[in-house]
Length: 250
Image (cartoon, rainbow, N blue to C red; front, top):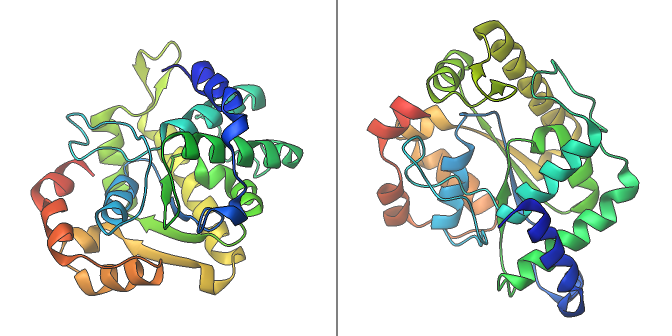
């Protein structure tokens, strides 16, 4: 379904929308923030394995066999808003207020409409998208009770994975970005992640290393999963994590 078709679906389904306070937990999601190839898909997948609702998400491929766990509706909304803002992935550090916050209530409404149309009936839910770090103030306004999990990874590993996967390309998406440009993009993401950690209340944000998870640090993962309001499922977690794959691909 195209971006525009998804938005048209959201608008056509307005009649079935219920506000957050009528649907338990809708106003307090788990938000996963990180860089490209930094372990956000893995962390979101682990939250899903421990009971978080994700809605309809991007399927996996050779680079992410387990799935990307990006909500298609959220992705569509953000892509349209990025087009409106004129944002370009090669910008060293885009401003934190890419979109006028007057649109925050509309985004909130569209996201909730899509969730309800997909069958959300309450309970913990998780979302991730590579653009979230650049829109974090926006999402903080929409979901002031959200818990944020920042997935961290070594910069050299991120850069190597981005080059291998060719995440970002120059228009018309044919020539990969150079290592220098990718390095600046990663620095921009990391600066924004630091901003999230620094400015959000300490009881609403946690850091976790995707490298440590793959290396077997289940105690920290369990702590973060339970802090986020989920029930840690050891068997599901172990089944989800494949160290050989994650170490290779990020």
